[in-house]
Image (tube, rainbow, N blue to C red; front, side, top):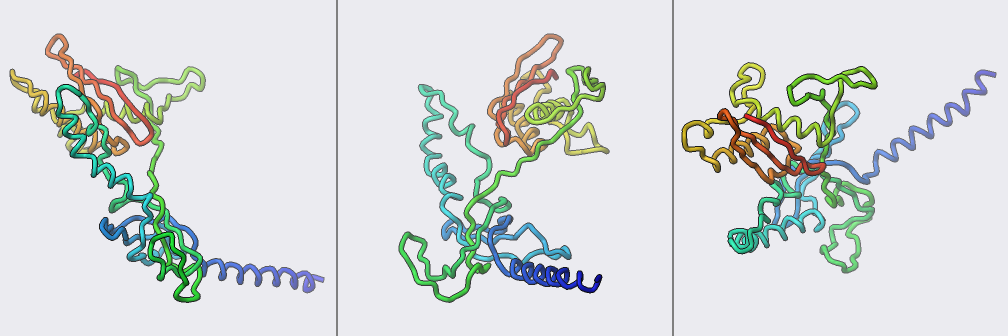
Length: 275
């Protein structure tokens, strides 16, 4: 009786193996990282992110065509940049277009993209809307891949919530330490960055903190101080795409209020610290 029951089980196992082997031979869509990008030819070398089951990296895909949707906005921004710079420099307009320009291009080395594999050989496709006859009979092959979409990688970090006095806060409902996430967590991290003097955490994190050397002396260098604050935020808070505004307000007892407004990958964030 047990031997009879093994027959359908073995049949199912064998069919499953055939199915898995067939599936592994098909290329469809996959996540990849851009290794090189030729912006004139619009082709890229990409590295699939998923390894083989034994941990071996997948082979790189070379000279993969890049869809227009991946680079069109980058080219438009480059085209209008000089014109917008002239507009920003006009005292009559008082605009700030370039302040809101993205720091990085969408299609770039290091960008995470989705690549798809066409169901037919595309060697004879000229990149237009014209019909074409496939050069070979191959189907779902890695040689016929196209990068068609870039992905904005976002991580929703969580951290312990700190009060303005730098105290940990107990959640009155759960009685656990209160947590913060999203834009509030990013704002808290920016504040912490600005409150730490560069080099102050030499043993823990020597690159952490902001450079306050431009604040010293009788003649406060506002532009240099603003550049230092921007550099500190961008270096220590990778979620920040642009620092849109830095404001300095002098306070009594030789103190300074530093307010910031920035655009992160999940929205706008603002806040301030007293130094």
